[in-house]
Amino acid sequence: MTIGEYSQIYRGKRVVNFSMGDTPAGGDVVYRLTQDYDSAESQRDLLDNFLSQVDPSQLEALIIGAWSEAQEEGPDGYLDGLIERRAQLPALKALFIGDMTYEDCEISWIIQTSYNPLLTAFPNLQSLRIRGSTNLELQAFGHDALEELAIECGGLPSNITDAIAASTLPALNHLELWLGSDGYGFDGGIAPYQNLLAKIDPRRLRYLGLRDSEISDELAVWLAQQPWLGSLQTLDLSLGTIGDVGAQALAESPHLGTIERIDLSHHYISPPWQQKLQALPCTVVLDDHEDEDDGDRYVAVSE
Image (cartoon, rainbow, N blue to C red; front, side, top):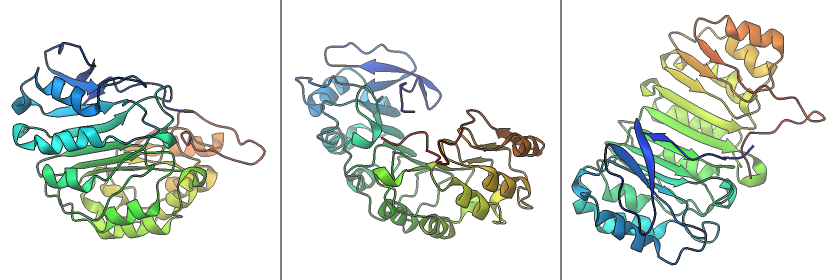
C-alpha cells in the first residue's frame, strides 16, 4: 500500500490546489501549492506568486504539496520563503509539508530538511505535519503553541524520536508518528518510544498515534500496561502489524479508562480476538484485515 490520494480536508476546510499561473479560488479554503516534476519556476517563485494574490495577514493554514524533483531536493525554497516573510504571516497556525502521492514521489524518496528554523520563526504555529523522513533534521526545541505534531514516513529514525523526547512542548495534545520499516529508516525498537512518552507526560495527550509500525504488538503490550492509557481520547496503532498478542494485551488492559477510540486498521488479528476487542466499551476500528505472507507481516506504508 502506498499513499494514493491527496488531502481533501485540512483543519476542517476544503483543500484546493494552487499552481503557477493560477488565480486563487477564494472562499474559506486551504491552499495546496503544487508543482509538476519538471516545473520551470522555483519553489520561492510559486510561494511569492501565491502570496501576491492573497492577503498573507489572513492566511491561517497552508499545504505544500508536490515540489519539483522531490526525490532530489527538499522543500527549502518554501521554508526559507516562509521564514523570510514571517512578519507578513501573523495568523499562520498550521502547515503540512509534503502532501503528495506515490505518483508524485514515493514516501521514502521524499527529501526533507531541517525544521528547527521554521519552528523558531513561527512561535504561534499550532500544527506541523511533515511527510517524508529522508534527510529530515530535528533537534530538541521549545515551542509554547504547538498542539499537533505529525510525521508521516516509511521509516522514522530514532534520532527524530529522541529530539521530540528532549523538546519542551507544553501545548502538545496530538502526537502522530509513523514508525515504518527498518528497510526504510526505522532503527528504534520500543525503547525510544518508551523514553519519548516518559519525557513528554502522555497524560496531556488527547491523541497518540504510533502508526505504520512493524513493532505494533510490542507497543500494544507495553501501552496496555500504562496507567495513563485511559486518559487518551484516541489510541491509533493503525497501518501496522498488530496481531493477537497486541490484541489480547489491549482487550485485557485494566487501564483503558475512558478512552473513546482505538484504531487498529490494517491488522493481523484473528476473528476471536477481533470479537473480544469489539466488546470493549469504546470504538475499536478493525478495518483492513491482512493475512501473513509465509509468516511475515508488513506495514501498510514503507517505500
